[in-house]
Amino acid sequence: MAVLAICGLYAATSHALQIEGIVTEVVDGRTFVLKDNSKTIHGIILMGIETPEKGQPKYAEAVRETKKVLRNRKVLVDWYRLESRCSTKPAKDCSKVAKVLRSPDGLDPALHLLQRGLAWHAISKIMEQSTTDRRLYSEAEQISQFKRLGVWTQLKPEPPWEFRKHHKKNPEIATTAPGKAKRPKKKK
Image (tube, rainbow, N blue to C red; front, side):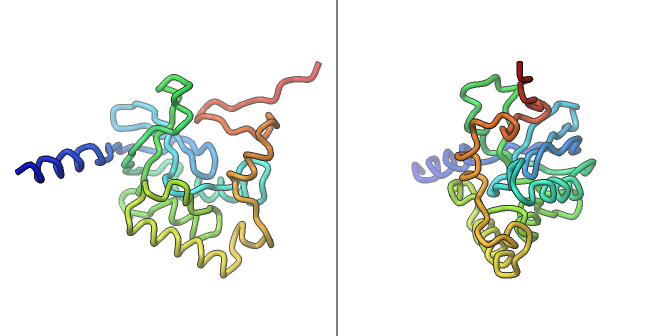
């Protein structure tokens, strides 16, 4: 009986919250704005991938592809956590890291971007994914590398996490929360 109670507690704490709605805006290759059925606005980050940052090769292509597959589309979002930088800002400005499926066809936009070579599999957060998603995402990245698609057309593409590390002091390349476009400061 105790084992069942512990298993039930684990299942309850690890279960994702679901949101269904329409994608109203694509912010970048993996971030978008969702209006749910009650008209509440949510920032969503695709779980399991990293896409090129602004200023990197293939950034615009990744954004275009994300817009093509998500904008004005109905999606089902299973969100597991708020983004890590939420500890320093109001909850209303935080994006939810989520597994996303497009309705009604079930397309996984994160996997789609990996298959086109427009994303890296985010192995630093690999334990957030199901075993099946880990395998599918890893295989998709390897196949797009082999076929030299998207970012893999470059000899040594710089992963977005490395790019952010090297360029975090440049305000024109800084990433922002959904709907909060960051403008470079005017020079005096």
